[in-house]
Length: 276
Length: 315
Image (cartoon, rainbow over all chains, first blue to last red; front, side, top):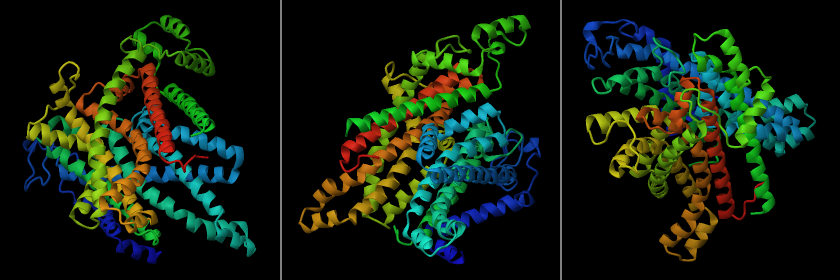
């Protein structure tokens, strides 16, 4: 594990990704302590204040400090995206492994249905589910988890099928190792790598999707300072206070870039053969 | 390409659309909306509501409702909008045509930029252009469309005043105006596409450059230009076909957001309006038409791929 981490840090993308995500983790943990104001503190004197000494990133239409709202909002943006991805990955991994294990007709039926669900564009599916379940942060999270599951099922299945045919599995069987040991000690470490890479990159996508759902009014609701909602709020004042959309927009982008870099770094670190 | 393969592929597409319609129907069943209340208003008498529910078939079992709806769909009847009272099908297809124009322009811009960018980045690995291409790729895949669109609006429309902010002018009515309204949305959508395809193109080109047949071609003494055009580009472009088809999925998702922001009356915006108004027939039609467009694109990509690469015949 430490070896993997060292290899990860040696890749340019991985190191940069780790640094960005470390910063974002710190903001999620200590954000409220660092924030100069309460996120709901209104100060009518500084309505639409431009970025400056008083308000580093400016203030919104109620005079709320944009930096403080961003720092508080990190908790409502990043952890839910992580949770949604993990839930979707877990659900998909279970379906994918079962499908590979069942084989034959069941496998065919499950995978064709998975393909069919994959034929619905991700945002459209998440949008439909979120609107069916009612707008809100939790339902948006659930919608993304459901939207992610089929893709993860497809990946885990193909990886599990490929692993079953590998020589090291045949060797382990020949050595007389038990089924559980083969799955846990031989197959899992080899299977998990592509799943980890895919999951990491999907967190970036989940951050974007979650923010998009909030932006469209189907995710977090006011007065939350979720980042997508901040952009949506600030859009009405684009001309007079562009910082209200630029700051949270940049925060979303930087977070997603962090996860994408980490994913690419992990891919390189896990496949030393495949150097690009 | 064998007939059996094509037949199997068409059958798969039909199954896909069946699953999609079951899914869309199920989702709209869960939607907290009572069609009778939507049509008659909150103050309608219970008797009137009951009568309308009977007439609309809302008290039928769910399975029967699905069958009626699906049978109408097969005959091309998407139902009547609960919001406007107009037939949903024509409205949605008109909207789709505007979205497709937007999508087509974005794909053309993407191809013109991404393919040369990817190849050049691969040829100049580690140099300034490669790093720039890498940066653009990361930005493109990491910044959601609503953020890109907002940034484009701030810079090109508000600060510089080069483009109209939002709205839609049909290019058949006013060509210059129509084009000017299309620029910002097309830029927004194509950034994501450029990011994907340039990345793909770069890594494919690197792989192909290291392959034996390219070395053989170089050893034969073919000029660099011939090797690049005849061997490298041709082989590196193959997987890009699949990526472009997959990207249509992103494109359709992205279009929802971009149309909403730039106020373009395309299918994505129609769908959002339908969702906001709980207009069930419009939601169903919009979702189905979008999924159908994606399915057809994937089919066309598979056919193109099979035609381009005779080695591949799919299982």
